[in-house]
Image (cartoon, rainbow, N blue to C red; front, side, top):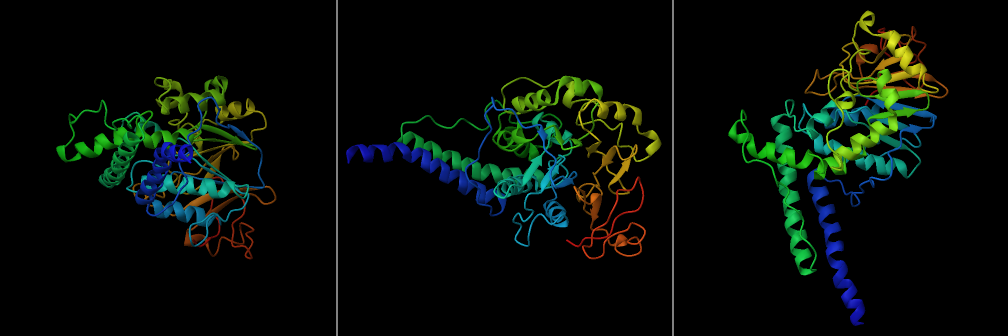
Length: 395
């Protein structure tokens, strides 16, 4: 009996720590109960190549706009009226840039993690990717952070700090080591920043720097390059040097940097105009300004690849393809912090081909016949090269 009592006492810090994590998650995420966070082990490589699914959905940049994020998932029939996964075995790729320009970044991160877990239970898959704004925030580059974004992180820090205090008290009782100081090594003030933002900046650095609690929990699970069937997904674009470097190497180096296991990642990979998350050679809205010859060469060196799907550059005309649809651009600027565009998502169906699902009411009538749309399912058909949109799907 005594040994059982001792065992229970020894387990109390772990049990209590898990409870605190769940409580903090619920408070920060707007009411989402999530299981304890699972951080991938560094020695386990991130999956880079996925088999071709029956149905594949691609969602562009969402930049801190929680409502538009949910609308995008509803457009594709992936969540129900209670925001729970109903997409079955669909594979979804969110192309990056969850962070910046909006005030609900953390809420979206928690929401995406919830959907990942729900999808996995029914053989679905939600893949999240790093955009240039994720990289910038891990680097401490907050040029595009909003006041609302700082406030959301301050609210998170309040609950997180309460959790740390509670864990440390319990750990002391259980004779375990205390949780480290969240703000260790971070200055109290910043040149060129108004004093009222000092606290928010400190908190954001602490949360998102390498091995920070938010970066390690969420961003370390993101891929930077993914191949799903015959589609290559990347936030900005790929050049021959990136293919030569190896996609698994790219994903692991970025992940290890975010986890604090290595120094800064090469500029060629994630910084500079020709890096994977910043490239715009294939995303200029004017088709004549897109480097189709380089794109064709890159795809030819990736076994089985037919197209590259990218975000990063807002397409005011909506989702479109250039270079014979070898480049498909899916950033429609949907966030209120961008152009407040109407949500659109790309669908690649094994039997129906490539289609754009849009919430734009301008394309509900009149365009249907010319695009051979199917009125019975309300979905558009075909992918235009800078052409007309597809029929509306109401969110």
